[in-house]
Length: 252
Ligand code: PGA
Image (cartoon, helix red, strand yellow):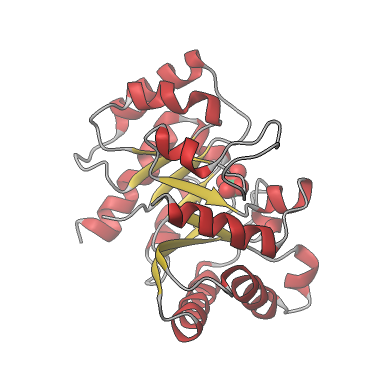
């Protein structure tokens, strides 16, 4: 099964945190199939988490990769390095990277190519601002992000998209699940009609996902999973969200 429930730990974590998180997670997760679960810790802890989850099947990934493979780029981490650590995926183009680190769709496009070259599954993040949402511009904004990020890519063996409205991230606000469902349907249509050679595996939703709202989200046909920030920092809550996902999407 492809990645469906993914934790984005952002700038959080420590060796102690990682150990405690795993204890809580294993205490509360009911399933026995871990292959749909992913964790993106800060890169310095990738190795530590690979050790903790060794052989359990949870996929470990990066929150970001550089758009170049090597070079004079102090502080950056390349896709081949992430692959070398045993990772299977990388988040690309998160709105925090776009806003705080000036990542353009053109840079994101280069990062997608880097990920593909190393057989890392890219999780491409898209999302509109509050103003764009208020102005009913969501579809246009997302379509532009998709087209600019994917144009020029002739082949991408697998792609996951995460729809993350910027105003929903860390705010406790989410669009209503039916609206998210129709946005996901539109994303799938745009990718499939304009980029038929790109293997879009799934469209996840991200932005204030928690245990309480998980079932209303996973009941929607086109919401294939979730990218989770704040709530994923609690091993128990992440496990409970994954349990809801299994009940509604896997065991059904
Ligand atoms: P949040 O973050 O779950 O804390 O809203 C989601 C994300 O930024 O990926």
